[in-house]
Image (cartoon, rainbow, N blue to C red; front, side, top):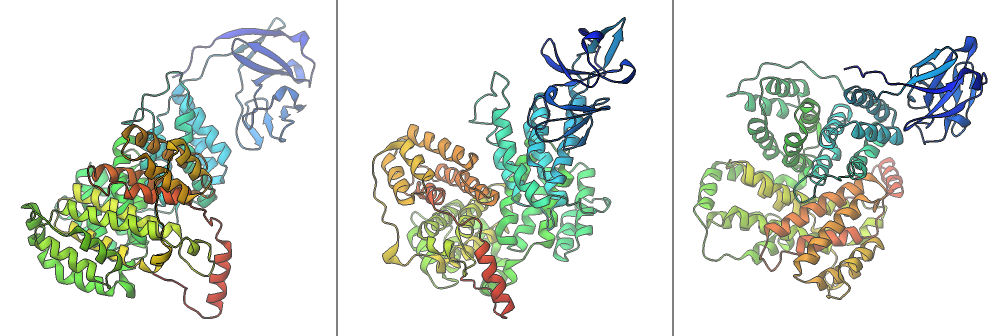
Length: 589
């Protein structure tokens, strides 16, 4: 809808010198007037859209004004940026009887949102972080919903990423929970400030610009008809055959037929049970992605879910590697018994079972012993939620045992990022188990057990493990120790908080904010900090009343406080030298 013009008088033609910009004020608008040939007058906004430098300080040549700050050049006739990144607002001008009038009517917000959406896509494609943030900010000011913008960014990632969705899709879902108005996050700022949503959206922009700059969207197939009865199995077969076009065609057909979470989520959980793919990322992403779509809307579901399905098709199936051979054999033996084992768990478990023994087997038992103990517990009817508690606690303990020296050894391919996945994967198993009503969901527990056990070589030896001692200081001291990268101090102060729920609530909020405030340099480390922090506190709530409930949080505290080797370039050099020398990767897991 076109706005009704609002013409205001700003100057007399006689006040304008050809080729020399003049600043005028029209209500809240700061406008640069320039007189051209034949007394044509141009009017543009005085603020350069790049970094805000006053354009009145610029140089005019013909119908082009050059900003003095970074040499951006703007066509005065329409505000188009002819050298640089983004356009400046141009105002309609009338000269009546020697007097200059400009139209200051605000453009329709829908038009602004559309323009900023196009500007955002351009900025992402060109890898321009600042321009992308400015486009998002202007869109927010024009009424764009931040949760919708999160889905836009996740969909862009899914369309252009080389092997399917990246961490962007999972972090977008996590960030959606932190927006003003989300449960527990308070109401939107009554002042209309966009700082919080812009800070949240910015977390995704740098990764997309760094990883996907100048990368075009991958071709996708047309939708194929979706059959509600046979479609999920057809999708599963297409993924198993690594046929991306067939899998995406079925997905797009399902979306076109109106299928949503109730059909698509269990279909994707089936794929998670078929293979342990891409270091567990497929399950971690699947358990989050539908929350994102439900909140931000399904308008961009093809991009969001298409990227995830591509990841299932093209991701590495680690369960086919030699270290997983024993697991494959055991799951093949268990598969016929899954309905029976699932039924036993639903009938209520024994009065007591030995959780400590299961955790010990997961952490220190021989290969396969943890799964054997897990299956024995299922046979006894131990509730699945209790078994997941044990998996989460074992994963947390593995992170607390991690030998941080490996993070800084360029000859080793393992580091903090590896062990954080143990907790986030176990957490994803809990989420999937709660939402996926299928005996095959038990396979996910065995994946977690295998995943936790195989990381034993990354443990510190017993004599060097952390000896946690509670100390005073409170929440502020704990967060300060994390900022200063002092893990033992941070852990001690957190232990000293004890069961003070108000203080623990403040600690949770503080840790989340730390993740959003450049605590890590590279996005992938920041993303794992956020994902682990959110998962750890959710697990504490799931373990409420358990004496070990703080163990996942302590694991997250240790990671947030740990000195990190983020560049990893020395390791890449060592990998290259080893490859050229004919050696296999130096992996401990």
